[in-house]
Amino acid sequence: MKDIEILAPLFWEYSWESLKNKLKSPFVIARVLELGDPSQFRVLERAVGKEVIKEFLKEKGEKTPYYPLL
Image (tube, rainbow, N blue to C red; front, top):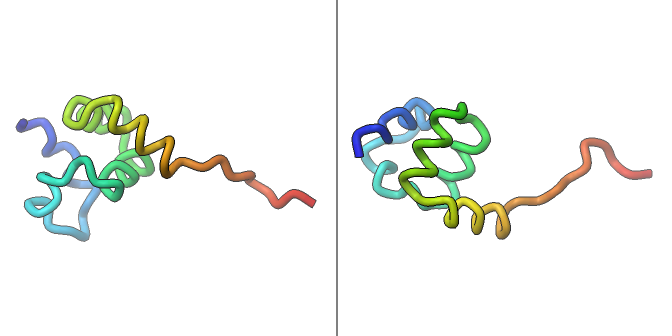
């Protein structure tokens, strides 16, 4: 899957060679969701599947307020 190389710039401080086989890891998914652009998200979605991303969001996603409730 050659198009996954578009994700490499999101992991500038890590060895891409060690990460590209771990695309389903919560770390990789979180980084793409946080820093990726729409084309990078689509590549991740094709690589791991919608269900993996949905499950990640169910388990790790959290609605947090932007300001503390008083």
